[in-house]
Figure 1 (tube, helix red, strand yellow):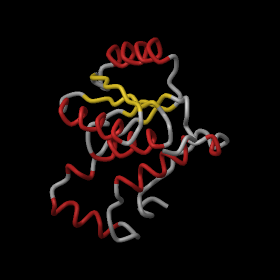
Figure 2: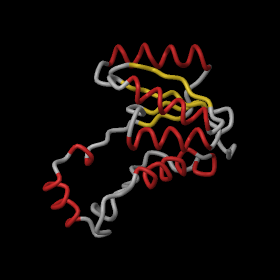
Figure 3: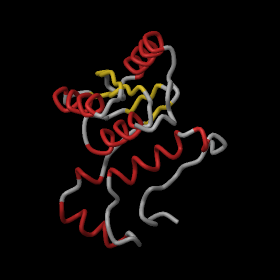
Figure 4: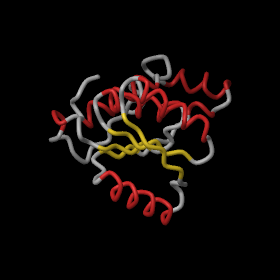
Length: 150
């Protein structure tokens, strides 16, 4: 396990599956204590937690609806109370996975890279931004989109 994020606490919304799961696992591999948010998929969230722990990482589950401001406030306050801080916040919203195959095929034709990105590629970009070496990068939107929006 890499320790570049040792002693940091991260929260990834929608971390029970897909990109969110991969991001939570990557940040945990780098040493962060991860808070795995989910709304409906408790078994999948538990699987994310088990993957993190099996790799030697630390994680906590947090079930709340990110569309409910009061639930978010309560969950984040509770997280800070229990873990002392929240250093990394990843607001994850996976969209392409839910598109019908015909729409995905047409969408890919628009991407200069000629393919959809992988969860690993997104997780690596998040890890880069979360690392101390990237501390001077602030207020930016990093498009992990294969050149779709240049």
